[in-house]
Length: 343
Image (cartoon, rainbow, N blue to C red; front, side, top):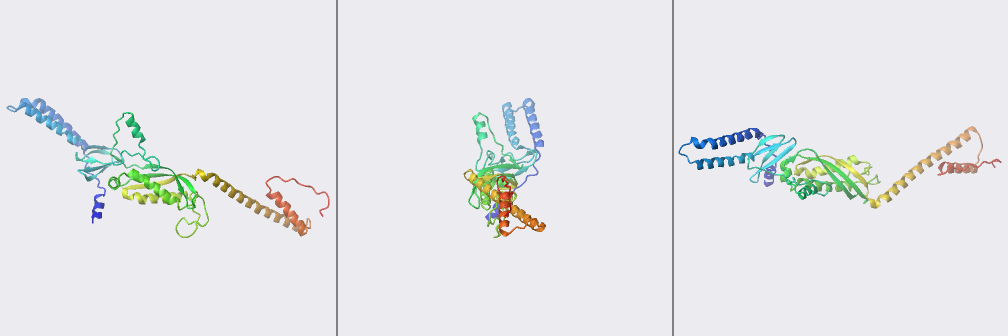
């Protein structure tokens, strides 16, 4: 029962009847004008009334008119303001406009001073530099509803084969539910950054860097060709889904995720490069040998068909050996001219 009540309490409530800030501001200005006029001319128009009391009453009313001014709020496009009244969630105003709310309402944004930088880092250096320069930094409690980018810094993660991988991910996100973002977590920006780190590690450890035999990346029990290098779109999609499942309770929506950097860690990069080079050399040699054998077979068949020369098995073996040496060698061969008898 308590859980249901808590979920209902944290449900976003949009205030749609507060877009009357201009009318209230005009009324406040008119009130000031009337009070100032009354202060100037009212004392002489009221006989038998103590002028000091009249002047004090006018000043009191002027001071009280400052209270409605506190309820005037201006929002730009794709901005929102979460309001609390005496500790209780009062509602959220969204969209561009001039609003008037309860002057005693307080706007709340626990992440107003947080500027996300790289992974696992909350970059407050810019604000600190401004404070050090003597500038008065007053962060706004408005919540941006725009799509924002978290550039997750490079992390060192082991793939499914235990190889250390350096990977960087950029996550596009936005605030979907302002009430959940403000009240369900302490700081939704820090929460998002930590969940991105966790999701990247959870997904990367499922895949090898490159295609490896006998590796199941889909969980169906069958080996497949999935890899970080060859299946980057699929990996990014799984990272996005993993992050979304974690930050839904914080009222955030993950729009997209992209791998921005992927490489072996420096300590094994040279060894892995040699391995790739060796694999490439082996594949090239295999292709050369297959082609050479085919050419030798074709040469022998053509000689037999045209009856150019009759070769016994020993001479055929010598010819095959010479042709394979010529076709598979790394260097140009030096021809030897036999001017005598073949035998």
